[in-house]
Length: 152
Image 1 (cartoon, rainbow, N blue to C red):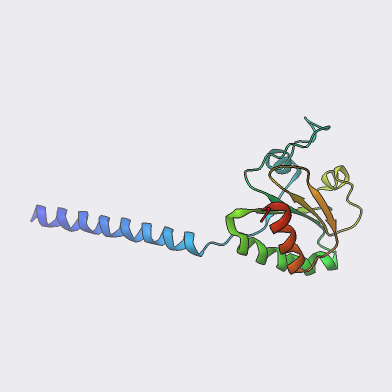
Image 2 (image 1 turned 135 degrees about the horizontal axis):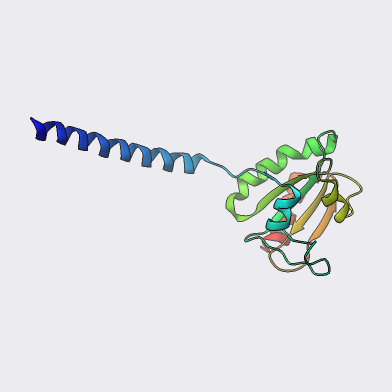
């Protein structure tokens, strides 16, 4: 009788482990990339630390990035936000799409001379970043991502 109970307990624990593994895998497959909100501290560690190295651009990321400087009250910023979410899902783990709120991160906005929003900073792995102003259409954003960031 002890062996039967022990066998049942072992079998149920193995089944539950398999179910957990399948659940994690299913979640991983369904999990799409989304835009990532950055604070100044995160920006300094993930993009470029302009405080310790003010004269030279040295990108710290492990894949290209598109950075959206925006504000919550900005109409064009609200219009481009869903497009950036779609692009984050489409490009998946090939690029980062970061968002920086110019109202809460005014020091970052000032450091990059942001005077109008949305402003988009394209950051390739090698070379200098490129800035674009305004809410660009999705096709134009895709072309810029492919040509500037992914060099396809």
